[in-house]
Length: 201
Image 1 (cartoon, one colour):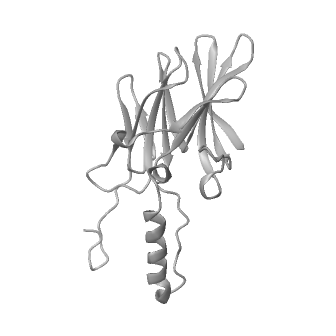
Image 2: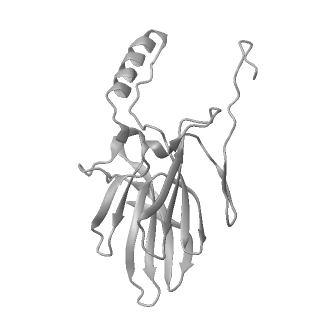
Image 3: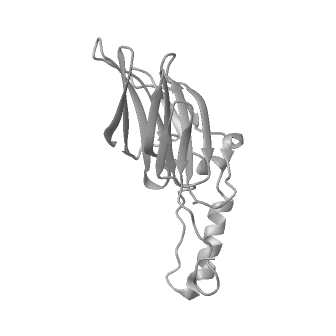
């Protein structure tokens, strides 16, 4: 796995290092990454007294930002919605065949192909827990279309461990994060609607 550190938080005598990168190791039972690989975000606990690496939590998605307040660490990550091996037509005559092939891919997919997963590792690197990062009833759809990806906000309480205490997702793309002590805001790009003359409506 290729990865690099991006942020660090101090909670008492422990440091929590945020790492993101690329892996070909899958999160599912088969241990094989979907469609050749995926970006991941990981939070690693380091005991500053002993210098030992402790538990960690890793989940699918590209790291956007994170904030820590009183031991509560909130991550914001972007995940491509359904990283499927779609067929792209080589010319106009191939459009119908490509559409049929792509429809079959979507029809044969499961909910786990659409939603990101996570896993917790103990200090020895063994998997302590794994599963779907965000459930369907915690996914939200905005009123206006703003991208095919999904933004996941994951909260862990470092005072008690790295088990997720709250997770929610939004079907949107996001780039800019702002956080205060009681609010977290994600800014997204606006996608214009195009009229028949090729101009934005």
